Image 1 (cartoon, rainbow, N blue to C red):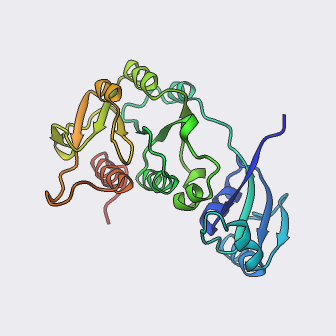
Image 2: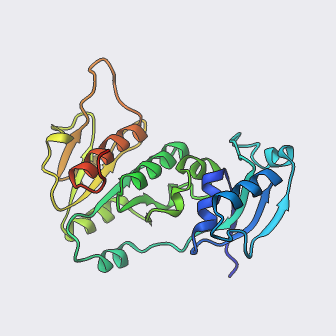
Length: 253
């Protein structure tokens, strides 16, 4: 069965797709300048091997991104999807670990927000992102552009049902930590031990009632009382950075 293909655009998104041995890049649309830049920055690797090259003018490249109105930076690639990662198989492969951290996105739909969250999660070594398969915009140029190459650098688990997935993770000794503006405790005061799920709700309505019921803890991010809330991607980045430092996943400057 032939796999579906789609277009992504932007220097970082395209470069990481080319670098990823698990990612099939079919065609590359580029200009002479972007080819020189690719070769210069990746002189030890032949990223363009087995990839069909099509040289285009900037106007021609613009037309391929006209709908999303994003900056292609002289690079657009036609790619196949990565093989989907099975959550149960992944957990079986890391069962000796006791400090796994997943982020779960429930009804977060804006591809720019999702991409930014994926970029932050990768930056701060979150182990994976769990999303609902039906609502995940996995062919969006905006998603790949906002993720800045990180779609090829982090585990993304597409599941059919968020609630059942949370219940399953509880059986695997994960604490479910829901983030809500009405949370009972600031997240920095929480005892972050063991395996944790960081649960973020939709941009407009937050977490669903059933999802709140599945949470072991309901946490909040304390901000200036004059401000109603943070953008979902900013909230996630704040939490990821704090936990990464707490677990010494990253080294402070």
